[in-house]
Image (cartoon, rainbow, N blue to C red):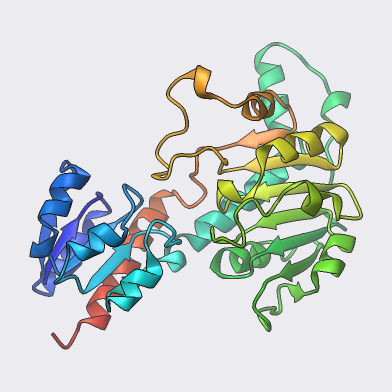
Length: 315
């Protein structure tokens, strides 16, 4: 097959596909329009999040057999229309699940021990010990919303911390030895920590809003390494100000661009809620890199290569 690569990835992806006789076309510097105009030449496309693959794109690709996203989610692709056209879809949540689990745990421990705040203060010559008294994870109940690859990874890593782990998912029967699957009512009653691991769908879009937050019985800590648009920033800021949310570790933000590669180019574009969030000492931020490690870079490429090769082995 002739395969278009719209984004650069670990070289092992190209190497493995080439070894199986496929032709790789590296189009990293081509515009979306240039790629669109030539899409009829390709049997497959490999992409991260550079642009959306919509109906117009799919209609311009009559020979397209597959789309492979080197990442976990498929929200940048018109999935239903692709399936209708008989286009096979591949993603690679297995490739960065360990990285996301470690990042979520790291954020949680940093928040509990005020490490980001303490680090800044010491660098400024301030030695505030009492103000940086931490909180222990032991004895807490950690709740995971979305118990797939990423949620399961975090739950596994929490073993040994002497915590109770519960999960909530729209699918039944996903709980395992690392997390008890519970009703949403029980989840909201028990959790001290909430970690989001859901894809971005119409159901999860702006899911984490004022009503959702206030339904929790206790004040809690929030970790979001999933999708920024699942959390309403204005409502999150209000909950942080009131103490309903004790602190937040956010690897993703509501205002990210669709490519995940940028936020805002000018300060004037920044919403008020985000401006307030950025100065809160009990908020820890990272630029959508939870699954972005040296190891996951190769694992993602290996996963996609394996899936493409295995599916089309009889060609």
